[in-house]
Image 1: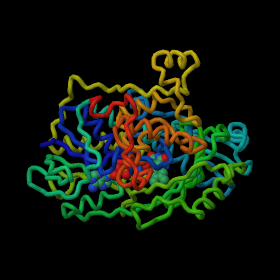
Image 2: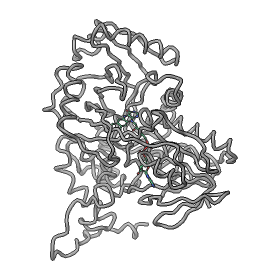
Image 3: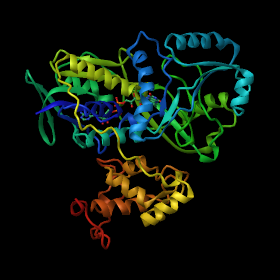
Image 4: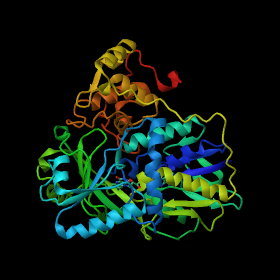
Length: 489
Ligand SMILES: Cc1cc2nc3c(=O)[nH]c(=O)nc-3n(C[C@H](O)[C@H](O)[C@H](O)COP(=O)(O)OP(=O)(O)OC[C@H]3O[C@@H](n4cnc5c(N)ncnc54)[C@H](O)[C@@H]3O)c2cc1C
């Protein structure tokens, strides 16, 4: 019997799990995918918004500024990739200036630090932006983050402090038992006094398992395009046009690693699994970003992906108790959900406390985890030291991103079980060749560490196998001297 069960291991579920791990509360998180963060959390723009775009009349508008504020402390405790690079909201013509004025006013109301830049200052600071842009609002608290690294770090910290995580564990049915809720999973039935529905795109389906039909989720697809690292530095701050009614617009995003990404689109769809990119989406993105920065071209694209926003029919976050005692929705967490996630966790803990959950702080809560050793980011002296300490730092697995074998092993030590799990933890496979060089090397290491033949390895769990078994082939032999995961444990 758990005090709290969290359904969904996206950034929202993981933030709540980590926040609860500070207290003497028996918590379990149930995630249907092979690893946490494999839902919308892995496919977004990675922006920590300053938070002045949404009005205070909405819940998302109230939580986003607090969420932004909480990132400094989380970053110092968990060490995920995060930088406040600042955000520019630009006016493309004099006709757009009144809208810029309104956002400036909103920023003042929300006490978000903001500066008004004229055309000359904008051209001095960002010389590669279009000279047609007439003015901008500069918000220094805007930042960029590695969203999956954030989710993994939250998960690791929560686990370290006692939260149980069950992956490949979809919730299939829920039953209201009065003073507790029974949760069916393929691993059996779990009981909890409080259940938090953080199931993202499937939150309405999860609520329906208890006969609740208070809201519905409407996926809104966003396509994003990653450009070659040769364009690093072209633009150094986030660049936003004025928002549209359905999105914050199509942006230029210098990601945490400096690579430029452009997107997203905003297309409503009925399909909750449709993560395809399209020629139309690409054409639209490049047309819009070239109005902001004419030297950006679709010829520089090295990879592309799509994510689905879980838009609720209220167009706002839906967070709170329901008609079923102990069952809370944390749903409709569309953008700026990543930014708001730490504040959502605070808000949910407050609600749980008011509903009767005893929140007694543990004496032994440890807020820190060991951040990953990024070999490529170290000084040459430190690199030499690392290689002397562990020769696997001297073996390069991913040439584009300079990821060493030691870093792949560390990722597996810290929970990676799939190719994407390794990629998102280390960046192996994210560079110019998109895994052409390192995929088989990473698979060899995964295969020997997890004691799985190649054909059982997956890209992201489920049926996403990478190679097909060859007819008549013998099972893949384990490498000499390699230990199985069981032996090591
Ligand atoms: C293109 C795009 C760009 C965006 N850019 C930004 C941005 O720059 N900044 C920002 O602040 N926000 C951004 N967002 C929004 C942000 O990504 C989301 O708000 C956030 O990731 C939502 O997290 P979540 O945990 O609610 O959802 P998810 O990450 O989707 O997590 C939900 C989890 O629930 C699991 N689940 C579902 N059903 C079940 C079940 N039955 N049993 C067990 N588990 C289940 C899923 O597998 C999933 O892992 C963007 C979104 C998109 C699509």
